[in-house]
Image (cartoon, rainbow over all chains, first blue to last red; front, side, top):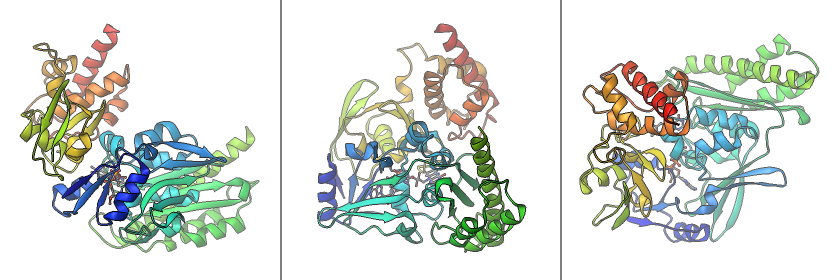
Length: 286
Length: 157
Ligand SMILES: Cc1cc2nc3c(=O)[nH]c(=O)nc-3n(C[C@H](O)[C@H](O)[C@H](O)COP(=O)(O)OP(=O)(O)OC[C@H]3O[C@@H](n4cnc5c(N)ncnc54)[C@H](O)[C@@H]3O)c2cc1C
Ligand code: FES
Ligand code: FES
């Protein structure tokens, strides 16, 4: 096995282009479990831990560009106000030790349907910036990034550089079902983001389909039916939660049944919309 | 490959490290530091918790090569000679140690908490220790120990 240790982004891209089968390792919280248990013996590990560009975030024309290697603990501490949905999801990841190492870039790289970053990135309409030495940068909308179970749109010679997302313009919530508060892989999860200036609501569903996904019909329904100057109409909420549950295509597995997941998605859709709407009205009144 | 980093203030170098090897394995099997425990090798139990550049991490999930040039502090590096760290003392006094397997990880994690948070609430203590499993104590004595260590530390400030 090789251990590749680039110290700049250019070197990292060159290493990946020359050895596309090398496995990137950032926080290692997915990669090392697989190596310890001999699930994978990649021919090389490509350590991204010394590529400074990946550990920074910046604002470009008002949009946040967050390096793939920024660990969850910093998402929570430094970006909690700008990206509240993602920060809430980050707070539910593993344990403090896992949040100190684990990253959104690694979550994207693993592309697990249960990854907690995905629903809030989908709801916020984030873009994933990926790059290869030979073909340059591609900006992939989050909803096109997840293409199959643990499969992303990333090509073998590409690395994830950052994700881009606007600061929240309205309330955002993330909700996750599991057996305890810490160390839980989501049984299923749901994220919501209100975009009041566009009169639109974004959604993201986790662990209830082969990939993380939005609930497009539920989003279109709200865009058409929500009265942004009034309290929530219970009939609108009911239809929204039905449409959200219909967007899921869950399976039965050790963590829960498909029926349970569909039910839980409808409950989380109702709750998160209600919480977000109450915040929205309160902020408007203030 | 050769890997070299600082452990508890001393520069250590080891050869013939397999590229997929964990920091935990290198500490225990190559550097003679068996304090950090190996229980799950998948980040679930926290018994391998060490400081890496001042941040508590699961040593089983860090590739040894990722520690190159960095600073590692293990449970062996907390005491000052024969003088136990206040967190270690509190664990002994409160009866927070039974079989002791979880203790090194909990001590490092608790050490970090009371460094960062002056008077942690019970909720903060539980949250900080959520990634450390103990099969013996039922956790109550561990919580007592962390409260005691935090109170002593606050009194010293
Ligand atoms: C005990 C435990 C609890 C966990 N709990 C949760 C949880 O609650 N929620 C959750 O979502 N996840 C959880 N995880 C999984 C894991 O922590 C997350 O997926 C985390 O986001 C991975 O980030 P990382 O930096 O550690 O990734 P790594 O392990 O370094 O990498 C993960 C994958 O991404 C690839 N990769 C990493 N960086 C890049 C890059 N820049 N470009 C291209 N590919 C890249 C790697 O090759 C690998 O395939 C848990 C893991 C453990 C061990
Ligand atoms: S051995 Fe590392 S967390 Fe259990
Ligand atoms: S004292 Fe035995 S595992 Fe904690």
